[in-house]
Image (cartoon, rainbow over all chains, first blue to last red; front, side, top):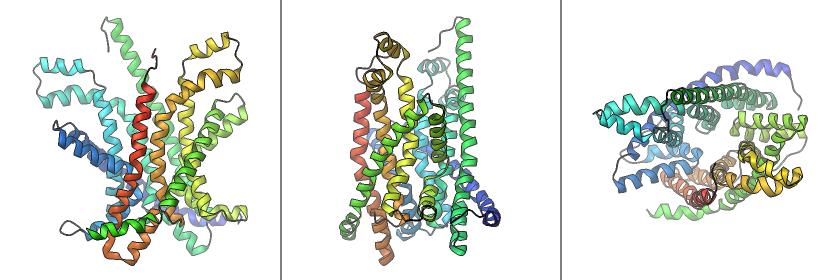
Length: 236
Length: 219
């Protein structure tokens, strides 16, 4: 097997076209993960022990079982469940399978962000007679969101790299395009290498961007601290 | 309900592959993690850049893509076939090794510089410093993260089913193909089995976290 540039020219458009599916799928999956992750965080804050244990169990179960099997479950088993089951399109399976799997990681990030807000801030807001809604929108969230953005960015990249998994339920992403081309032309070297290259070409710059963002946010945080110390304000 | 229980022995046929792939890739992955982690800390220009390229390639491309590449492309390049089992272990090990090498590097760097300076003052060699002062403290920080990655690797072993290794996922899929109406039972039991295998690993990670945070002086 030797590297053949004419094959590369031949297969490139197929993979480039499939890249949009992969990218689009990543965005939709990530949106689902962000929303469902928020729901988990909210449910975990409900102060009723048995309910809390139940939610923790569900989250732990989803986190520690393979996303591959979860995709199979949604695709093959879900339609068979009486009364609730409906046949899902491969795209929907991919979105909900990976979206729900990643939502469990993302809810941890939200939690760390919320816990990072100093307690005194919330107490001060209570002292100012803020309603719960005001406390969240005006005090907690504005401080909790910026530090977690780089972490969310990391998960966006990780999710992008998990998308090829959806080949097992037949979503037409980059890997599927390479496989189809490989089977039809008995050429595996160029298509698969090209797919790997595409992934690297997109995830590596994004990772660098996230690192840069992290450094920038850290620096701003530090200079904020310095400024407030100068003014004689103590920060926790 | 009885069909749920009947499926267990069928799935258990794949258990040995799942467990041995997990153990193999974990050992290989930790080995790579230390090699690449120290490689990136090396003073040698060539070693450092070589490991950086390796880490970025394995972290930047997807594990599934790597599995396909090693399975379909590599035999043609090498001229001989590697067994699917070996490919599974090597690819999962190298992929997670690349991620864990950052844990090794970060932990070694996190040991405070005063420790290194004190060891230098005691006239220890570079090797002695690493062996007696830095590593014992760094490993303590690494272990909880290693536990987390062990659970990740367990989940990744399910991917060897797509390169036709008969792990529990593969066995389950075969059974479902023959008995399509059993789909719910097969995949539910698969999820439950993975969770049961993960339970001791979750416990181990929690224990390591507690152990690692105990009695450590913080600055």
